[in-house]
Length: 143
Image (cartoon, rainbow, N blue to C red; front, side, top):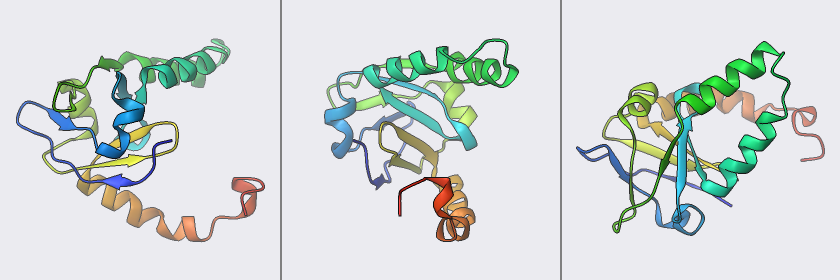
């Protein structure tokens, strides 16, 4: 399970070092793809395949399902960490997420997310009140 928030740097070649905490789950090979809110989703190869299988169950007659599938898969890139545990973020994905030198990598359970640090800070600040006021019905049985 991927948990916690880390603040690595993007190097000049578009690489980022995987946080040590995530290496066991992601070190064997990953898939990076477009996330929602202009972040990138990072899945282990196995988790990406499970997620892809669930998405494929959605009816192709549903426009939202088609749109999501297209966006999610069209930017997907399989990456293998190098000997220094760096992964390369393809230029198109860096542009999509507005990645610059300062990043935030946050574990979200079954996947991680890579954010532009300023975008993450704005997202977190903008959602703090709604998180604090979230009602039980959003995630039944949680509290």
